[in-house]
Image 1 (cartoon, rainbow over the protein chains, first blue to last red):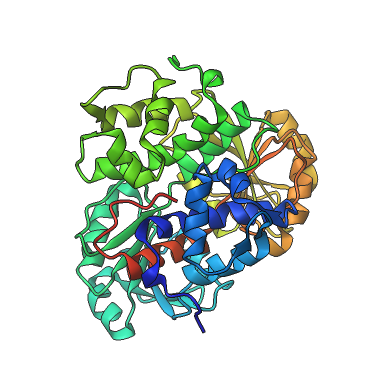
Image 2: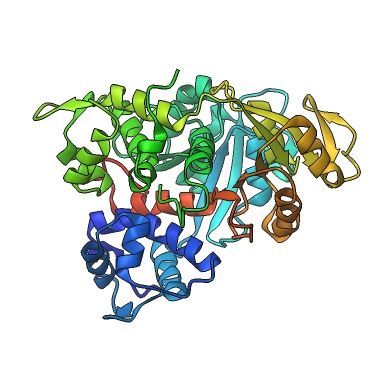
Length: 220
Length: 220
């Protein structure tokens, strides 16, 4: 299924893949079908030679002087980012945000599946809400093991996040997406990524104030 | 109040501020108090000379050979990104995600305030839910004008997003944060930014699979 061996991609290149992918999808939405490394460099602030070297690890993606097909790059980079392996996901905190995630359930990607949800509110534990049985955080470790879940999304507010994450990392979970932007402590073998909506909104407003009509793409 | 004139910051530098800020907060959370441009370069993939030049626009942020104080950089960059102006925000689509945003209401930042919420579901229009009166999308333009709102957050699913955004851009809204990742068409004078949770999750899992224990920070 997969044509690219991600193990052979240098870590620095891999780090730039999401940046490339994000900007290429913006270019695609603007109807731009082809782009040269120099132009992509202006948008991403990655030097053109670095872009060409990065892309060379991924096979024959373009021709010298001709540029790269945007749609093809998006396809290749999306495939690299996606494992084509099933990822079972646990939701920690089943309030409005947890329910929104469960309802959506990453249906655009058939490999991502929310499998179980947890809360510590006695009023909802043991009930089935929006199609999901709500487990107690007391049973987190056991349920995660039984269902073979390795990924968790925490929607617990900052003030209670560390307490919840401590339970999460004491299980077979290896990767956490955290909607509370305050940094929490996790062991070195746990991958964690934060969604900071306040910073996303401030960045939008910053560009709206200062760079009106001049910004082709925002690279952060 | 503000000590930095963002108008004097080159656009390319401004584009990198969110990237710097995001990685600096990760460093801070790891207890790293001071960083040299060369080290920050390794994490952000921005050349050290570019980092030093970027920082030079912002005043005296560090000393040669000594490095930069991480906490101080975070403070300065946060201040630049934040306008210290009040931003009134409209929520478009008042399902679970809209309610989650309204409940949280960016309370960490006193300048960001959700002021009104909209939906097109007759079952909730005209009701007060979670403290917010739900307006009809039919009244969007008028309510936005009366309340002097310039920013909208759309939680409308991709299949209906363009229809909703068409109403939003036909008002005094200038900036849109869109939780549906599919690109929508907006006039050139509208700023738009997308939150793509599927890509965020795939990026987390990509690094969890391939770069376990080796990644200091993810720069995308």
